[in-house]
Structures are given as C-alpha cells and as structure tokens.
Amino acid sequence: MTTRYLILQDGTVYEGEAFGAPATTFGELVFNTAMTGYQEIITNPIYYNQIIMFTTPTIGAAGINHYADEAIVPAVKGVVVREIAEISTNRIRALSLNDYLKRHNIPGISQIDTRALTRHLRETGVQKASIVDQPDDHAFDQLRAMVLTNQQIAQISTPKAYANPGRGANVVVLDFGLKSGILRMLSDFDANVTVLPFSATFDEVANLDPDGLVISSGPGDPAQVPETALDLIREFETRVPLFGIGLGHELFAIANGAKVSELTSAHHGMNHPIREQITKDIMFATQGQAYYVDAKSIKDTPLFVTHIDITDNQIQGLRHRDYPAFSVQFFPDAAPGPLEETQAFAEFMEMVMARRGGGTI
Image (cartoon, rainbow, N blue to C red; front, side):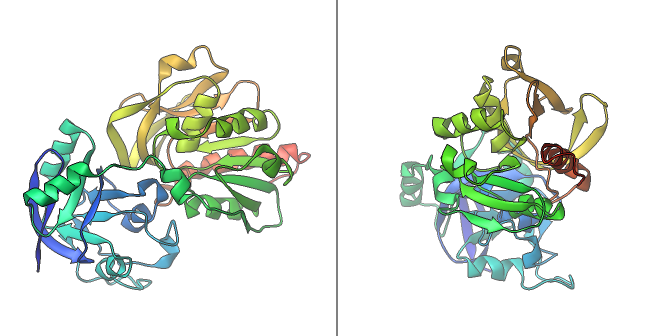
C-alpha cells in the first residue's frame, strides 16, 4: 500500500495508507460516529466539500449499492478510516468502497488512529485538512492558504426545478442541499413533489399551488442564506403546512425570530437519543448538525420546543403556535436509520391532507 498523510491546519500530521483515488484534496475535517450507513453519509450533500473521518474501526464491509445513494455523486472531498474492508459479501453490492471513491476521484486514507484524531478534534474544533503525498512545508502552506467557501448551498442546490411525480398531495421542496431520503419518504405517501432551487421566488412557489412546503437540509452556515429565503418561509408558513429539516429547521427558527449559533463540537452520527416533549417518549435519530437553535432566544417568538437531545439538551424540534408549521434538527428520513424518526413525515402529511379537505394519508 502507498503511504499518504493527513495534515491539519494546526500542524498535526497523521501517517496512513492510501486507498481510493491518488489525488490530493483539501477540505474541512469532521468526524462521524455512525456504525453503519457510510454510503449515505458520503453522498449526503450536507458534507459538501468536507473530509469525513469515521470513528467506526472498519468501513467498507457492505460495499456500495446505488439504492443507498443520497445524491447522484458523493459530496465529500475525502474519507479517513482506521481500516478499509477489502472483501464484502453483501448480495446487493455493486462495487467496493475503494473502487467507488476511485470512480469519483475522491482520495481516502486508512490506518489512522481515529480515536486519537477524534479526541483532538473535540479539543480543537473543526479544522481545515488535506490528504497529501508528503507533509512538507509546501503542503502546509497550501492548506493554510485555502479559503473555505461560504457558497455551499448555491453550489449544491439544483439549478432548475424538477418533478418527483406522485398521485397524491402537491408538495414543493426547496432544495438547500436535498438528500434523496426526503424524496423517498414523500414518495411513500404518494406525494406529487416538485423540487425548486433554494433561490426560488414567492411566485415560483405559489404558481405550483402547493398543499405543503418542505425546507430541506443542507450544508453550511444558516447565516449565509439570503433574507429572501427567510421571507418566503414567513409568508408560506401562514398559507400551507411547512416542514423544515436540518438547515431548514435552523432557517425556520431564524425566520421566526430565534437565534442560531455554531456548536463547539458538531453532532454527526446515529442513535442520538431524542425526547418528544409532550409525550416524553424517547426515540433515536441520525444527526448531522454543526449549528443549534439558542433555547433562550425562543422565549419571545411564536415557537415552542417539541424535541430535545437528552445528551446535551439541545433543541431538536420546533413548532409554530399559530400555524401548521414545524421543524426537526435531526434527519427524519431514516437514511441511514433508525426508522422511528420517520414519524415526522407522517405528521407533516397529516397536516397536508387536512388542508386538502380532510383526506387520509
């Protein structure tokens, strides 16, 4: 195996073995604690331009199958693991993770002490990183000179509207970095979905006569989203059922007067315990969260908290007091699982069908 290096902006160097494409890459390094679902994570648009480090010791044993893709092409810039599996017995495997990354010109590095690297990132926060052939001064100069884009949404959102047809309720999805799991869930309810760019205007949405509006998940800082998108949320939450997911949750909060801040240590993983505030039921959910809604800022808004992460008491769900509009910070599409979090889609579609005249889902 070829020796390669993972270097961090603070000067830290990790030596490992190359897999995937023999390319040099730069990006923001984040760690993910999920034990399964690496393909869904690699193809999730929220990780656009990031290097993903998996804490699970062995990655790749399930191979790659295109039923699990969350986007047509992977969003990540690189993959870091402790060990890469060479053999897969998965019956629906189309190719190996190694071959998949080569196909998309994405480098990987294995034999990294991911436990030590995770502890380092918990202490220092997210850092710029690079996978290189030599950890010399030139490589570090290039890394430190790299400017991370704040235009992730504009680069990842669909440039044109497209349909995901169904025979049921008419649902519009605003694409801020849409993952396919959201469309799969809406298809399970036979929704007739139209996906619009994040920059869609009021008229472009209204002309579709939506029965409901979904604000998708996506990458980046919610503060970088144009005010026009917030205006659109404020207008349509008064007209039709509205459902925000991930970044959409953060935008829903901001549009209604709440404040959003950056986490010191991002949440990326599965099986986060979430408490539903009214029933006190506990469910487990997948998170990909770098920002959080400030609980103190909710007090003077028309919102109330519906879900809490019981590990750190961060807000995981909000609902409007006056309109059929709500949001969740976690991923409710079970891609990857757990399945219990999909209840949010059922609640949304119940609101949508009630608006249509009392139909059932």
